[in-house]
Length: 184
Image 1: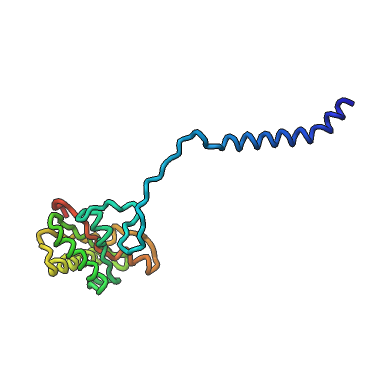
Image 2: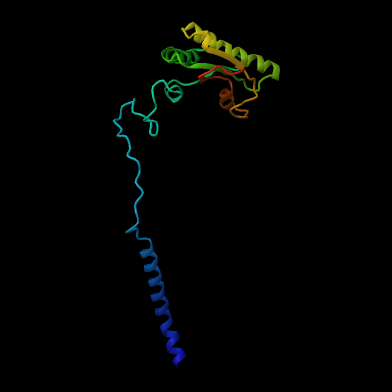
């Protein structure tokens, strides 16, 4: 008889144990007394187009970060061409203004191509692209002694792909700032 009474009491006892376990779990989740981690104060956004990008509020004018973020260092080309289109010229115009305002920087122009031809053709085309960008910057007043150009062919692709929208990323000249001339 004793076992029967215990068996009838078990479901209620099990519910009581479950409730106690839930209560203990919730109590353990209480963060009272634990130091809260403070988030860095966010720069207030004004809604203007010249608001700083979060994380880049302290970029110094004339720094390499300034060049990369505010000017852009990539110039793109159409397939099998070293001709500068209006978009490429607009990018290089911004680079020329910045470089003329920051004469302490040298610039290495690195040309690249996609895989639309044999390796020697792509190496030649990438050099032509780098030379075209350098000549354009010089025509905008950047001292030619501050620049040098090197073509890398398709050895350093951004992405290995077959879609046109992807391949265009490989047809580029990258303007890399330097404080001293390095080897080609």
